[in-house]
Image 1 (cartoon, one colour):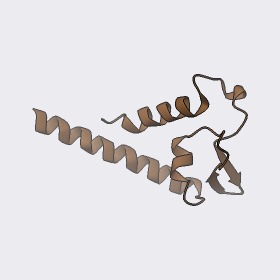
Image 2 (cartoon, rainbow, N blue to C red):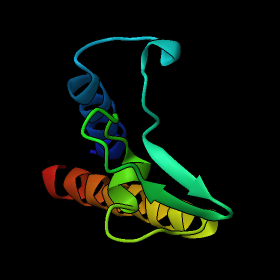
Image 3 (cartoon, rainbow, N blue to C red):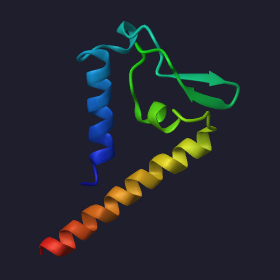
Image 4 (cartoon, one colour):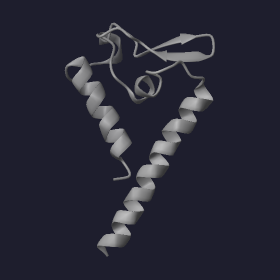
Length: 88
């Protein structure tokens, strides 16, 4: 349960680019960087990543993205701990 954000991100990248590909084979970047603001790339050919999902509604600065992704891992860690406690 703790690794769910990693598993979802990995699956979304593989599914959105059509299989396993090297970085140089991907023609479009997943995000656009304008100064210190990171935004999801609206191009349909862009791979879907955790960062592009977090910035799909509005552009964010890197500390906001790090905070939100860490929050996802904390929530999934708490869910894993609760699952362990309820099943033992």
